[in-house]
Image (cartoon, rainbow, N blue to C red):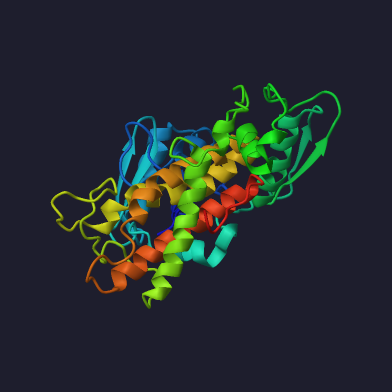
Length: 348
């Protein structure tokens, strides 16, 4: 089950509660599901109960308790727990959380994965000063807002409503890609660093890690073709990932572990990408996209070492499922970089 599908499931639960008279609210157009926060549990969480509490005339926790049985019986949902003031935490059944459906969705939508109609019909006015960083942020926001079916209009007029901390010097000598990264990766209130560190191809450079992870996914596809197999999304819980620990690193014991556990950080990061895009558009913060791409790359790199067969191992359904997940990762990395106006080379 993908986050989009789970969001529809939550909306259906709200609709059912309204239909049977347990809640008297207007069913929202969309519900955001995300990874659980501190104190949460399970695979996903939603704040829909807090969202509906005022119009329902009930405490948010009571709204969550009303929705709980409607969610607990839904297909693909294993367990539902209410925590804190009314957060609904959802655990998926093993197959539903394994990533196969998510990988298929990313493959089907390509770099359009994460796009939604969350800002449909809305016009976002961006009034910026004539300054390199403000221009770069506005340029990225035009594309990011468009992913949510909105339209951003950029003007150089007063009063300015988008003024990130200016760059201390001209970033042009870094080249287009590194300059954009230097301007977009920091939060708007942070001073950007205009240094040659952004050009160095080493682990300490987050832009390099993202582009390297993307290039690795493309190399895996080429190398798999030479070995005579291609990607095929599958249930990563069933296709056991041999010799990989829960953080994606090679296991010292070599004992087999469930792929659903081994790739959970990567699955979570990919599943959270639509929420990040929406938040970046709403809060006018392309830095959220940049930082999330770093997260995706960092959890992906250890996993990418496990995709191809080793030694005398023959390609199997597990390898095809892993390759499909790797390719989906590359798609998200390429899509995110393109929104920032940065190239994602296939060879690095």
